[in-house]
Amino acid sequence: MTTTASGSPGTTHEHRTRNQCVDPWPWTAALGFASGTLVPTPARTLYLAGQAALDDAGVVVAPGDMAGQLARTMDNVETVLLVAGMTLSDVVRYDVYTTDMATYFSAAGELVGRFAAAGVVPCGGIAAQVGALAMPGLMVEVVRTAAR
Image 1 (cartoon, one colour):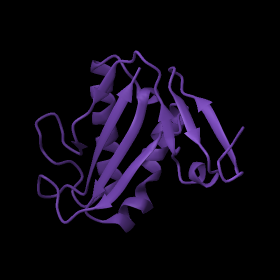
Image 2 (image 1 turned 135 degrees about the vertical axis):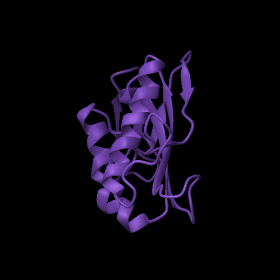
Image 3 (image 1 turned 90 degrees about the vertical axis):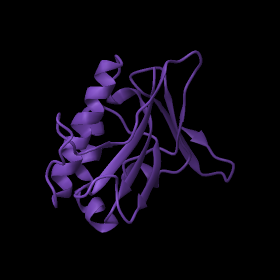
Image 4 (image 1 turned 180 degrees about the horizontal axis):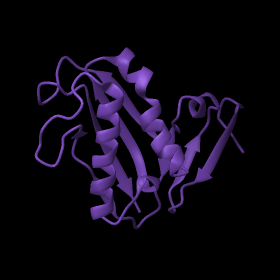
């Protein structure tokens, strides 16, 4: 337990890697993210391009189904991490872009559950609603940064 500048309690905890979550506010964990991640040097860093619900041929998966799109998106994220020799426990930031924020939050358990299953509370990034994504039918796209 740590104390923030305002005197409120904060927490830090280690990822399975050497990365350390820094969280001065207890309410963030209830929303499924940490406020910051401290990455010691030297570290290998992977900047994942935007990942979406695309199959191996680049065709949109689960049009109109946010939970289905989140599941495929997370499969794709884990595939890129695996190729780089990393796992979800190495993710230090994630950004979410969605065409429908309310629908995203109602289905976000898929994303949060994947991290929880890996024993990780990832550092948050942003969640933003956009008018459209790169391909018709996409409802969500995520950008990740991982470090090990």
